[in-house]
Amino acid sequence: MKVLVTGGAGFIGSNLCERLLADPTIEQVRVIDDLSTGFAENLSGLGVEFHEASILDVGALERASSGCDAIVHLAALGSVPRSIENPMATHDANATGTLNVLQAARRVGNAHVVLASSSSVYGANPRLPKSEDMLCQPMSPYAVTKLATEQYAMAFAKVYDLPVLPFRFFNVYGPKQRAGHVYAAVIPVFVDAAVRGVPLPVNGDGQQSRDFTYVGTVVDVLATAVTAQVTGGPTNLAFGSRTSLLDLIALIEQGIGRSVEVEHRPARTGDVPHSQADNSVLRGLFPSLDPVPLEEGVRATIAWMEQTLQV
Ligand code: NAD
Image (cartoon, rainbow, N blue to C red; front, side, top):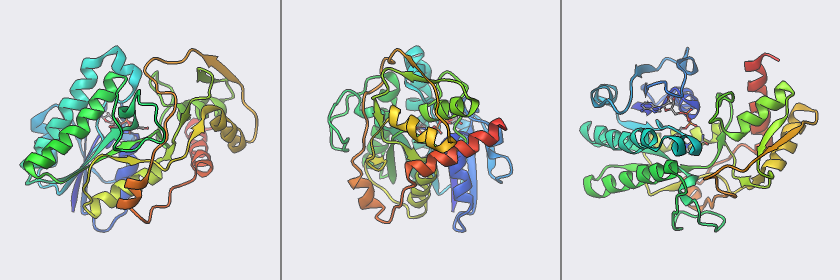
């Protein structure tokens, strides 16, 4: 089986490439990535066929996807604040980019497409836990593009019989997720600060909660979806835990074995207050899942960060 990973030089993508290459049923892994937020070094030594190009370049996408049986579509410009600052760039990469990927899948004879959507599609709908049949009320341009991603996939399934499976990721974290840039996610920002011994920046009061999912668990699900050719509608990829930022900080303190300082900042526009997945659809599709617990995942993230920062 030949698999193309779009955005494969990114955080989740590079972890996925490593996981796919460990599977004997996978003959080749290709990556298309324009390195806008990813890093070629994430793939060093892995043995993937790397196409440094944008998914907005249809010719490059056609070359990268030729002969592929499956595509895992992860390429996107992440971050709610980035999309508020530049909605067009986010739209181009995430919505138009997805359309290009789906067209490429059709061109190679209807390759199976597994796609990354986001819990941000639930947006202003306050109901918890978030179940897939709830009304989506996106609160940012980013969330709209992720809704477009999954809706394009479902439309292609309907009208062209394309086999698809869009996943709604909820706060994925783990090794290879970087801090040190303005759009960094909360776990790498906190772990980086804790390891360096500087105050942890908390937006708002820290009571906001998230359903954190370890990247090793996410890539296991993605790899199983590819090899077992699982198809379906938008599916939450998280396990129904709900951890506040203050509880997360306590776990980080346990992991590094000392207390940390916290610096409160204003709450961010477009961020949802709470997020927690209903995982019954996921469990129905993947009954034998065994997610990595948060304590263990945070310890692995601290170890990676310490190694990266060489402290
Ligand atoms: P990431 O930024 O590390 O990875 C995205 C990759 O896509 C990067 O390597 C980037 O260079 C590449 N890319 C961006 N635009 C591109 C383009 N036009 N052409 C080719 N490559 C392009 O982010 P990630 O956290 O690994 O996210 C992967 C996917 O998961 C994204 O679609 C993101 O929206 C989605 N997602 C992630 C999370 C999370 O918690 N990390 C949550 C919800 C959804």
